[in-house]
Image (tube, rainbow, N blue to C red; front, side):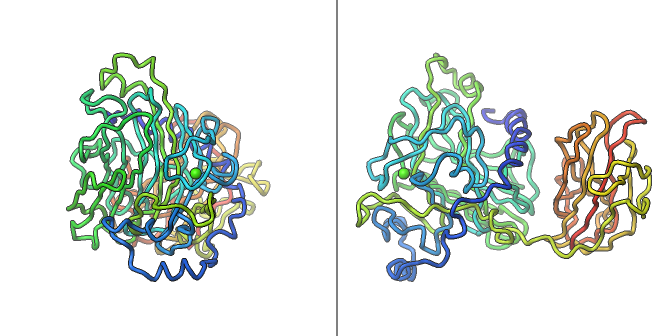
Length: 489
Ligand SMILES: [Ca+2]
């Protein structure tokens, strides 16, 4: 089926790892001042009102021209592209892919209260995080180029238990019900039935989806006109408790409800919150083939976005004009850029090993010269290094493993195995992207380790972390160095 090849997200995900490394350390320009309790009297009184329904115009009806909407406590994130360079926009979102394909433009929709929008050519994304919520509305203005072709993947709303600064892969994998669910609001040609870019639909992944390639939800079958601005809003609402199938999703186009779908048991734990927004523009030649596009070479793959608002209530299209003429919102920044806002911080350090005094409790290899920070490290063969009964730490959301790895050969991947007494099986985590003769710092949460090679089984949550084994594929005399092991509660 369309959009469902394994090749789809994985290659991108590998490339993103490199992108993110350069992004994490960037300061968010002016970020500390953003949304810091500066609500004006007007905004406060607006916020005290119940959120207007879609029929009443939504939150946007309280803020003519979107002026001050970023101060409403129900609003989680605002981006109007009026402030900063592409690089600065990427920094405050937290992650940008193919920044070179982005341009700030003066192409505006009719209700734009500002002077700039953003354009993406070919491929690119902005990815950000809000604090975790049970219901997320995402409103954005969008326009496809007059000569647009069919699109492979588009904007996603994501619930991720262990969010990272970059989007994760997962095409063709059914996510565990306590780890992730997502929905994409996407144009689809429906096998050539509609001219490009097609009609809007949801493309959805969760633990009870029907096929491993996700599920599709059609709304009103109204073809999207290329070259015309639209106001699109998507809503994702989690089920109210783990045993209830009362989750929903819905989308609106220019304020008109196009589709509403219910009966979803999106998650198996209330700890899984909706917390990520992926402004994705992903193109390959596959949709042209699947839709029998007669002239794919004539297509111009460009899209414009503007006036993005994420909130816990319906937002609606912009109403009216700002009181003081053209305006700039105070742009938001990723919740991941405020430590502890989205994920509990790693707890107290309960175990360390730097191998300066010998192997400690580690077995399977030997202490050698050439440590990451001190002088010594632990060299282990493909069969692995293990440590048993060493930390005895109950696994909470904050429980974190850290260490550094340096392959002396071509090993790119190291597999982490943690024996679970609860599941009587190994929980696994895979570390990729290692480079020969380079130290790579590794950090992950214990709850990310799961039973099964595909890591779709139960996690270590509620178990006790007291062992660790690292293995890799290679020749018997290949070695990987390990150093600076740290376990946090
Ligand atoms: Ca704008």
